[in-house]
Length: 269
Image (cartoon, rainbow, N blue to C red; front, side, top):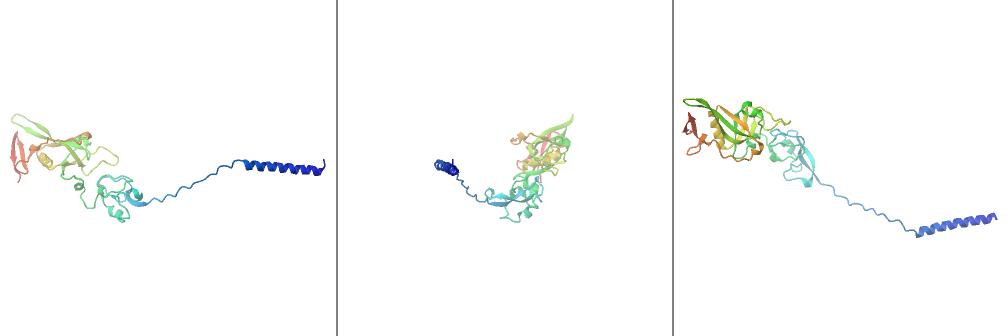
């Protein structure tokens, strides 16, 4: 076969193959079109600077450097939060304040949990209508030192009793379910949570009537003992107390004195 014919046949073959490929591509189903939807842009979250506790503060301790400004979502800011926008000098002003209750790392500072500089701490934490009375105690009369602030106790009075034929001791529970405010100058557990602290003075939360009772008992008793009560008894209502020690009938401050088994009343002047 002539070379020219071979060339023509080769070109014809290549053209046929190309035409076939073109025809197949024209009849093939086009690939699905991928549509990428762009998510709408979220508006930036509004933030506010809030005064926050940056380390634990125990009850009765000064704040000092334990507070600082922190970014906080505007929608989560409560009315009682301290914000830099409203009070730009709040940090410097509150550093000398004292914690009324324990404060914990990360919580927004609330002014209601603070005692201002120069205010009496004990008078501030004392509930309305109550009185704080200090009573001498020792390890022998305080459940071996296991009584701590905020515990509940009974107050037991022990005194000598002498008759014509015998001498002994009388013991009576004069107050029940009394809250302990402080042991010496300690108003809460230590930071390590130790439950033993032997103090010399317990400060008790009392009603005015109970304050009079224990004041008389301190003069009459040879010893006052504190008996620790269970936590579950904290809400127990107590009706029977040693009201006979202080009579409220007729005269304010009338005292009933017991001598050799005989009861007499003395009006306070």
